Image 1 (cartoon, one colour):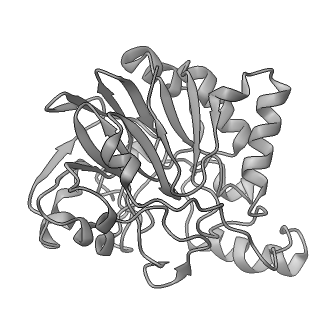
Image 2: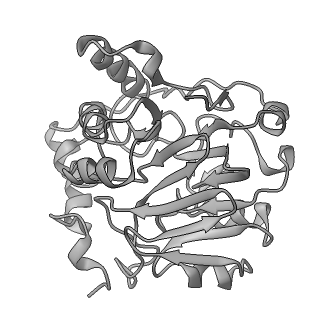
Length: 308
């Protein structure tokens, strides 16, 4: 039994489900056809100049990784700069910016311990001087890797760092780094609030009604980083990953001002076509009559100022 089994996605997915997804559905012809040449997200060269000079900004590194300057601090969220996830799944697009191009990072936020979100080689490149903020149960992993400055948070707990307030909020997901530690570490999203406004990063999550509670308790939210990829097949992924339709519903419940798309175009983890997530998200925004300026689908390496 994992420490946080009671908070994990239900129904839980296990080896039998993976076998059905990867083998039986394909043999039966009920799986989506595999894309022969997946296309990664566009990449915009970034030498760190804008990040160094703008008073507040957001940069998409790729996947769920961002670098933000907010509340006088330089922050990375779920940074993964590695060429592969755990030596296996190869990147489609290179990271938009790497630590060597940046001033020293002040804070690193980690949403959960899956290898595409807690990548120890990337964290070692950032180094031990940064403060690492993690959900409860994950400090041991970082400290054993030589990263001693760690703060653990439970859902709805906050930490203040200079002019920045950091709150861990719920997510509909689960955790595991090895078969014997499933759900022993908590997972979640973060709301980051500084004088410039509030940014929300959902982490990995399925759709759930608590987005409304996050918006109510932590709002107003100015910039909501929400996942739009890694969602097919739905029978397998729906409890743990949102598709664009789910992400737009989450955006509405949060009552956020700007939708920042993430978790697409970097690694092939699931069966949907690689360029479907941004195309579908743009289509939904148009169909629902939202102002297109409220949707940020960034190139990897693109930096935008955070201005309300």
